[in-house]
Length: 102
Image (tube, helix red, strand yellow):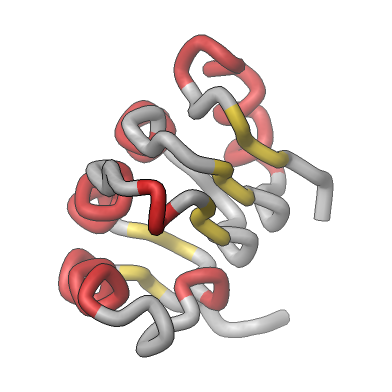
């Protein structure tokens, strides 16, 4: 089992400054504050967000990610994270998102 890695607001802000500085897909958990930072991106330069390492997604995080306008990759979700993303469905998540079971 791999160790849990928390994506914080500070790491999210660092990623926005230089997307090559942080591999956000390597994180297994995310703070609500970090989701708000990442979800607020509005430019076409950020047309995808690879959060494939996240294993869970709470309702607050899912709702915050709904502000993201590009393609959202959530391939690592398991258990309740998968259920939360599916429960919210297309009305709450971005128009383009990709869910695959890990």
